[in-house]
Image (tube, protein in one colour):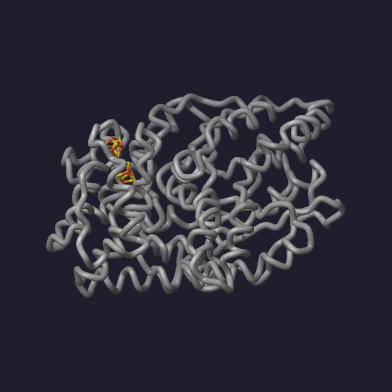
Length: 424
Ligand code: SF4
Ligand code: SF4
């Protein structure tokens, strides 16, 4: 694609980066069928190619309008278009730049500004989320069904697995990793990280927690609050670094969206001399739990063989696995979780259109409820179509979103693996 970037940006680092991305797009349109918003709305401007064209105009100095902002807001940042693109266009990176510029130039209405502000003040703060959940639980019976469904249920163990509630094992191995707990996950689904720690313990790896770490920064980043996102990344680098210096061989994250964000810390802080080197090192060590276990498959098989050697009478549990966009499109992790679940004795049920977003997408379900709801209904229908006993996913946002629309239990897949390891 030919470009002629405007003077205000052409000589800047972000201008050069945007120019390179724009030039890599050949306008072939292969990305269109992969785009959920194009599939729903049928408007080229709600497709990757259309949005790239809008961002080209913006970067070439054309007036920015509320319509441009609307089409960029409607993007889920699912990056399914990147997986479909034969030219390797880094659409997600271009969108970050395009949204930041639009945010600077198009004022939002007061109600939308307030909503975005409140989300940024609440969600990245674990204690505030806990307090809100406690208050919501206290008045649970009075809440409308739609809100009630979003509240986490008391996390009773799955009966068919008969596994006890997971506890964090004491560190007893020389091999160590550090876990980033994040913000909402410990409040919404507190069993996920202890489950990961248990599985790691079974394969000879101790999992430590970076106590002073918090939100990975993804929420602020995707709402174009880049200074706040960089601040959160710096705080996490400070919290994780002592563990890295002490020999942690990986920075492990159990929410795929947060794992993708931590993988980006090196780029996010590359212009900060006080943090650039440490952030790059932490990005290099960052792993979604599935990525780490994929490299330890023999040890996982051995741990499973130990428990499977004991007498079992429970029938195989049927599992529908939802691969979050951040896992399959951002981290490019595909076909890793499914064999682990199969090896653990679960039966996987078919899920059509597995590449399609569930509509959670960070704050999208709150800021774009109609489109998000349509995607959610389609995703739940696809997940339920094989009559599973449980739905498994790899990201807390997807978990909470899907849980709001199905009577089936929805768990992180590592909880299923941990329960299997513990229930022999
Ligand atoms: S983003 Fe990729 S797939 Fe889409 S039009 Fe451009 S080159 Fe083609
Ligand atoms: S990120 Fe997702 S919603 Fe946005 S343009 Fe790409 S495929 Fe469409």
